[in-house]
Image 1 (tube, helix red, strand yellow):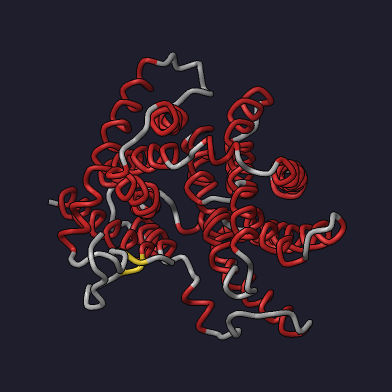
Image 2: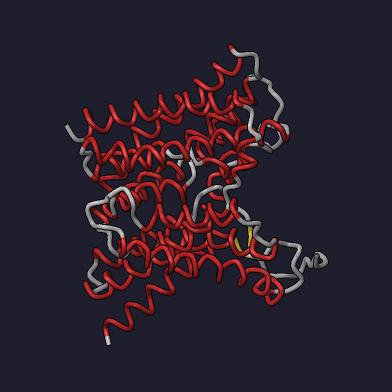
Length: 349
Length: 34
């Protein structure tokens, strides 16, 4: 996990100076998204503040040339505000619900991650790419996109181009799910549970996964957060497992497997989510506090979602190899079909 | 670009978000309990 402030800053003050313009920009567009959301008729379920905020960010980045001074703050908003929002979301969740959703998700997710990595590794060899590239793409799509790829890359000595294309494939998967779920899910009358498992189980980037869940409904967003957290928690286990596999097969390794890897790669914001849920379940947080935390959490999320939109440069995506687009699309279809069938017939039957 | 300063105190992004989130929650609890 990256650290803040980055090492190239001389002081906390210089770092704060570099992030506040971007945060201010995301807050302004986030407030505009919330305002626009109130103008949208209530029966238009597809259009809500999540989609509006992502679209505003996307529009700002791609229609206008945003000054570089905003970049650090936009990056900060799309990550830190997400973690804060997730912790506050925990204040409205019951620990028993988290455990029951988490237990239901863990088997589904363990199968999808294993399949995704093994299948991508196999397919990569069949189509003339190397297995390492396949494992990178499989890890990105199976677990949590960019952060899993970045975490795995030094371990299996991936090359820069392999990392770039794997990240591209994971981003394309997210864009596909973002457009698919609110439109198709609502027209087919999917329940919040199913939509939440789909958003949390298929989309690879944590922020986009939660955004997609919330784009469906707030309840689906909460379920997507738990399912996605389970996937993230499995990231260090997968990296350790792949390290052992590469050691066993005598493939090049950058870092040696060590038990400490499990902790260094563990997403710590999940501890905050669980702590908040424990406080709620123990009755420490009153109903009024839950409402306040939920409102604040939606504000942190909306600022984060603007940051996500503003972080997507369509020109860069357009430069992606069409082959990668196809690869990511096929994996999304397979993963989506699996999560749909597993959720429909094994979890909510 | 500023020069690299090894003495600057750094914190992992997810720990930072976790701590700030819990601090805000603590403030909410105090406000609503008073």
